[in-house]
Length: 129
Image 1 (cartoon, rainbow, N blue to C red):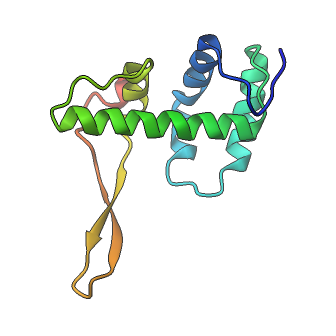
Image 2: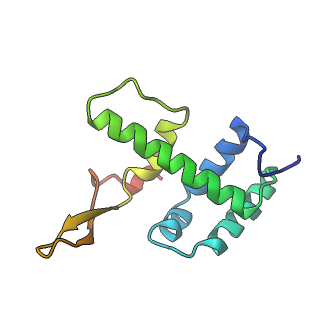
């Protein structure tokens, strides 16, 4: 399979990425890691084992795009707009719903600092994986 910067991801490729991404150790490493090239190199190797030939940059770009699209739809749903949808929303929701989100909190001097807030979690959060 050819891979290129402009090549669209097939449904099977996205499903393979989601299956690797959903692994607990991968989720743990991706959360809160800013320099994550090594993780995406590992993800690209895992995808190759599944027959998906993508380099680490393509994997990182697709990861970021899926995460952005998920958060956009999730925000719309939380605001009452249930018309926004995306193809892999439920898969991404299973992966991302328990991930802590960084929120900005205004400080007294007008600057912002990052604080972590846990999304709706239940005792069965980790037992689903």
